[in-house]
Image 1 (spheres, one colour):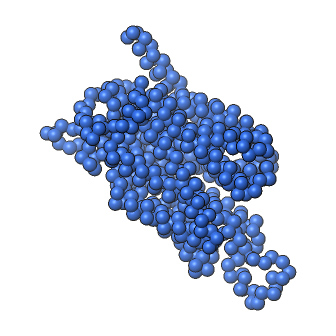
Image 2 (cartoon, helix red, strand yellow; image 1 turned 90 degrees about the horizontal axis):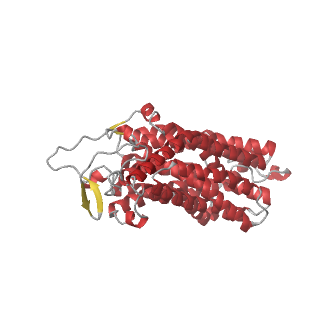
Image 3 (cartoon, rainbow, N blue to C red; image 1 turned 60 degrees about the horizontal axis):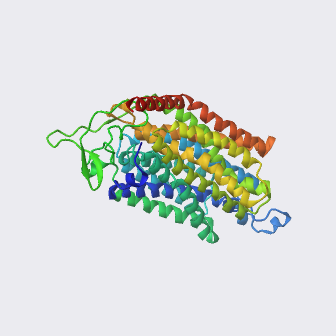
Length: 499
């Protein structure tokens, strides 16, 4: 049984805290800029269409005065193009994740992370601010910039998960990563606040503020982030670890680890090398297809593709659904949609903590996803009451957002640190890129399916679709569930024999 949460946290040093905060706020800033684009779509659509669309338009002399910035004939066409940009971004982001994970395992994680943050900030500045200041509007330029933005942003998530995996071992990883994975939800809230605070001056200033803040965050990361304990003279064998013999063993293995010597440093336990032994060479990066074949990678990737489809559908469509289905004002719908993120933050933390105490992840995921299917049924029948809707929404976020956060963070770290690597190969960023990249492909394709199902069959069938996808996540990890349950049964039988 793992130690208490407080006891585990007391062993961490200030180096762990700095790594936690810098990686956390790196993704907060990235998601804030991503949310900004969603928050200013109405203003962008208005800017890209004629301000006068009736018979009085001929009164403008010359006609070019109001047609210079007209990309589309009406707001419907502009809105459709904005949806195309979302799809372009998600697909380029998914492809980039496969590549950036491999790059992250071969280059310094700090350099790759900084390049992704600063490069994405520069692209967003050009996309939303510079083109407006120069009054230069071009569909192909916008598409090219958004493809580039997706590729650059894909460099961030594998790197921050790899850095966290270097600093935080199996002991307490579920709780720590569950708390840390709230970064996306916090970024959504921050992005909405920053955009709304300057939107009255023009949408270009929303892009300006978030891109400048993100670029500054990239500079801070470049000068302040330590990517692993080795950079401060500690071994990479994951501190802190517990004094139990198997406390630092990855969850993806049932074998016993060899004995390691530990030394107390600043209140934390770290495995260290003998002073008279030569320093080991840095582990070489694993190949992309080798990483795909690691135990658990493919099942969790496919499960995450189904689950991220549902999670991102709530992210993109929830405010629209609340306004369209219940007739609530857009501002009310935006505020109410926050409860889904709140439920996801709590769910990821609580479920991660439970998985730490159990020593297994898959059974916790399975139970949460089963309850998520029931929560989806309940939320689809929510009455026209904002209080009831917010409670059901937070419950749904707890059981869907929680597992989504666990797979993308703690479980990805487990998969990239499993014993099949035998400590000789680096795979954490590559595995994280594979899992999140596969999930992003599912999310990208799902957005079109959601709009198609809603237009043809209605919102109730959309929720049935979500329930099927959630059940698909359980199906893909079923072999891992049985494997971990058998391991738990063997452990209990062994303990009973000892007693």
